[in-house]
Length: 373
Image 1 (cartoon, rainbow, N blue to C red):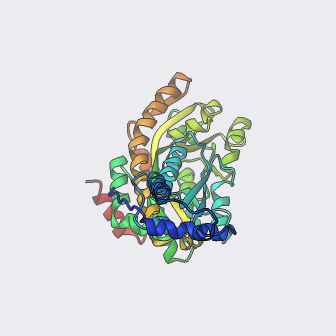
Image 2: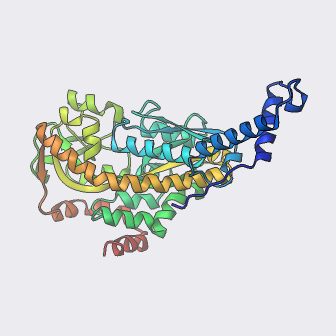
Image 3: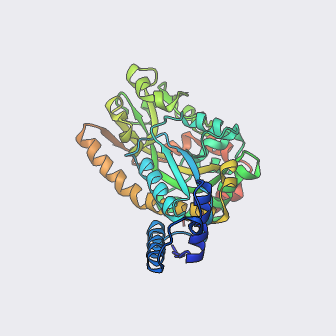
């Protein structure tokens, strides 16, 4: 990332000092009774220049220090020590640095601002209480987006490399832009991923046949619900923050999550059997409301965009290693992982959902498939 360093001139600092003092009701320097020596004045100016340069840390976007301060409230349903929690922290750290402190990101972890659906309802409804959120890419589908739905089609994405090629493609940018184009009042900023999503259960499941009749928690996304139905399960919609207790009490018998989220939310304590079907990549994106976006200066917007790139790279580099570490730790804690040597029966079972989800979008499907080559 290209770094620009801007050092404010002595004249500008003097002007800022005058305005600040005036705002506090103090006399301007030339109005005060004590006259400073030339040496004292030079010393103070040099100190202020050095302090400002240290605040910028040599990385601030050019011109951003002139911007008014903005606080952005960022909602994350996962804990601070999770993969997505760490990704949010990296974004916060980077954007605050690049904006020379003119942007503060207030990350609210652990779903304290509500489940994902609640957060989206708040943001799309026009309330100013939540400015940013990390959401599953397909969470906007019920609100009218279509392009992101392809990211949740079962067995559409082959591996991590394939996903990041998709994210960097024209199609990926169209996915981020689509909420703006259909007037949802939010826009996508950047992609992240949580690893492939797998099914897990409170009782042992060894094959696709064992899924039949089981109550499985999924989001309200029609594709995910259709997939569970195709596999013979009974899709059940409950809030994410109620999933642990629902698994413990038997309200549901299974669910699906990426491995990192499975561990960070301690689902292994109540559902220690995971079948590695890898039905979809845990594709996600960070969004911001148009209201919050409009508050930012051009330089601050650039800081947000650049910080998003850094957070994406951080997420991608951390995700796979983090997943492997999670698997080893979970095995040591007694989790049973079931490998799926042949996914074709699973694809065949989901053929109806796949066909329905991709109808009329064949060109995009071809683009995605070509990126796997």
